[in-house]
Amino acid sequence: MKRLVVTADDFGLSLEVNEAVEQAHREGILTAASLMVSAPAAADAVARARRLPSLRVGLHLVMVEAWPTLPPSALPDLVEADGLIRSDMGRLGLDLALKASARRQLAAEIEAQFQAYRTTGLPLDHVNAHKHFHVHPLIAGLVLAAGKRHGMRALRVPRETRAVLRAAEPGADPKAALDTAPWAALLAVRARQAGLLIPDRTLGLAWSGAMTPARVAGLLRHLPDGLTELYTHPATGGGFPGEAPGYAYAAERDALIAPETLAAASGLRRGGFSDFLA
Image 1 (cartoon, rainbow, N blue to C red):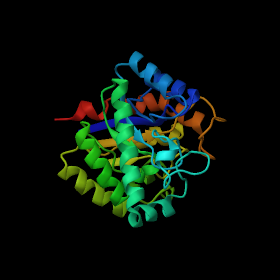
Image 2 (tube, helix red, strand yellow; image 1 turned 90 degrees about the horizontal axis):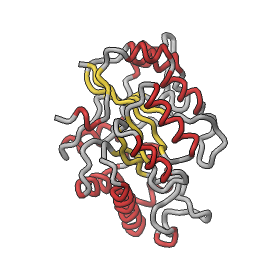
Image 3 (tube, rainbow, N blue to C red; image 1 turned 45 degrees about the horizontal axis):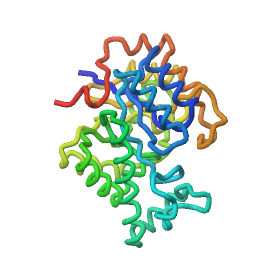
């Protein structure tokens, strides 16, 4: 059976993102959204989610390049001078391996984000992380431990099937924006051992920020059996704090509501992760 979760990341990042999430859920194929609990428009995102009970919402953990939940003074190893969490993922990952203080601070920040999500009162459909930083083995352990305390039942594992991409766009030579395959394979084993639901594949890595209507429709037409997560970054426009350079946000919104996408999605069993739990 072909089962599909269509997720919007960065819910709460800006009003433009929130507006696109609501539109894509009401008018298109979007079934889930991942909330950044401390982003500038998080309160607006929560209010919209409460008006959209069929939208499945999860936690988009922020552990790099965004707003922390704890005060910056509590995270001296993790934040930069502007108070945002560091953007140097490689160096930060090394610091987590070498510095116990950095690990303690990140554990506290992860716990704070789970707690902040709980205070929204929204059911926790799933968990994933900004820039897939949860594939880092040390971070994965912290996320799995915190998730166990907070009722996490589903986790994104960013493994993309290149054959599906090539079928969707013949002649394409897709290269993942972030090649996480070895760490994602380890994460999949650990997540299954923890009893979590994970997707059989996650689509959106190679074309992150460039999920056009033609690409999304093509992916849906060539969807394999099993549980697939297709994640996107929709917004009604750009120019907001925290936007990723070069991302075609409005085109990704359009991809979720385009007639060709709606036609390709017909007949697929769609929902959030919680809809596919045994």
